[in-house]
Length: 252
Image (cartoon, rainbow, N blue to C red):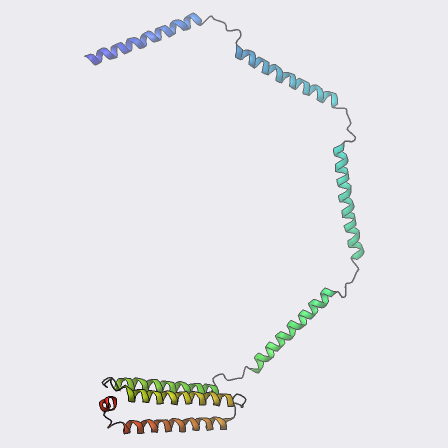
């Protein structure tokens, strides 16, 4: 009920407002608005623009028969045009006068000719070297390769001997340090002498023609005999030490 009364009051207020608006429109329908500040401002703007256009039209009408012959701008443009025209004429004249000139020799041409000749000789040398080496068999073993192979095999055998010695000495009483140190000292001296011999041999053979097979066979024979004697010495030493009491030798 209260809501119905609320909406009824609202509708009455709306109807009263609409009735008031209709009354005001009826009272003001015969009113003639003649002048305001806004209309005066707009009229002034319109009159000013109209006068400016009229002045422009009159100026154009008065100046239509005027012939402008010379100004500072036209003089500047004419000077620029003449300068550019003279420059182009100079270029044309130079090209015309030089079209029959034959440049035969200059410092630049000499330098380029020298560079071309040097490069040509370098390429020819490269082609000749390549042609001379095309039949060389790179797989052919030389003495150096054989020596390196032999050194590798000897080093490999030495490492295998070391491994075998280490394995055989796993159960040896470590208190017997005297005989072991003597053996190691002997091995070190023998290896040192072998390296010294290698250096001496290499120094003696640096000027020898490696293509000579006789010297190679002699060197290999000498190395074989030395290695054979070293092995025999090792066998004899090992055999002589078979009955040595290691504990007695260490502790007296």
